[in-house]
Length: 76
Image 1 (cartoon, one colour):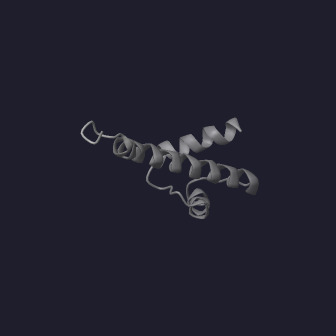
Image 2: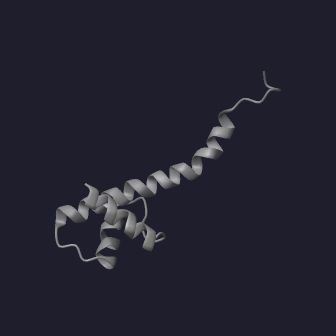
Image 3: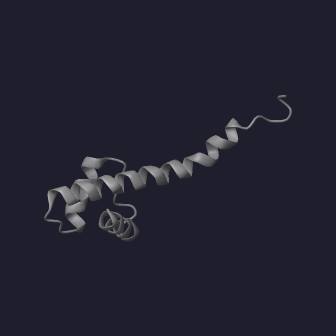
């Protein structure tokens, strides 16, 4: 698993705009930027990249939604 995490983070650092939240698209993009002979390893890396991209997007959206949830003192 450490190998999957290491390779995934390296690929995301080198190609941040290339990968999306779609697993199938990430598999195709992975074929373009890396040579991975093992189907299982390629799927694991594409899946981990998908999770990382989703978490990054969630982290960017989180501050906006948390501010909306806090009631204002005037409403109470």
